[in-house]
Length: 88
Image 1 (cartoon, helix red, strand yellow):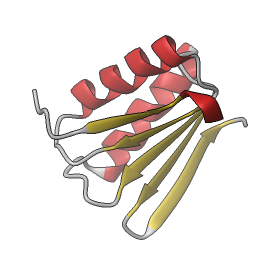
Image 2 (cartoon, one colour):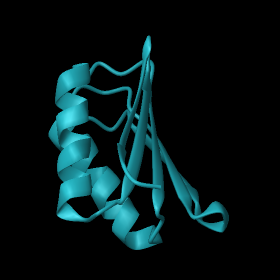
Image 3 (tube, one colour):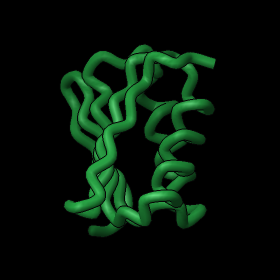
Image 4 (spheres, helix red, strand yellow):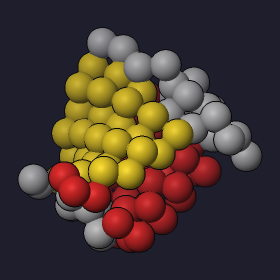
């Protein structure tokens, strides 16, 4: 499990910001879901510009989180792409 990922809590905005710099998509997804449940934030932003996680694996994991109901909206910003999953 990598510990190089960083979660920044932004409760006042009802948003969460996550930065992925590691390579373990399962661990990163679990952290996003756990913090989302703790914060009850409706919007999640993932900074993947320096992530070692494959884009398609990261998108699939974030889609799983939205489908499971742990978040209703996730926006992934990566190097050369910007993907929105779910509804605002």
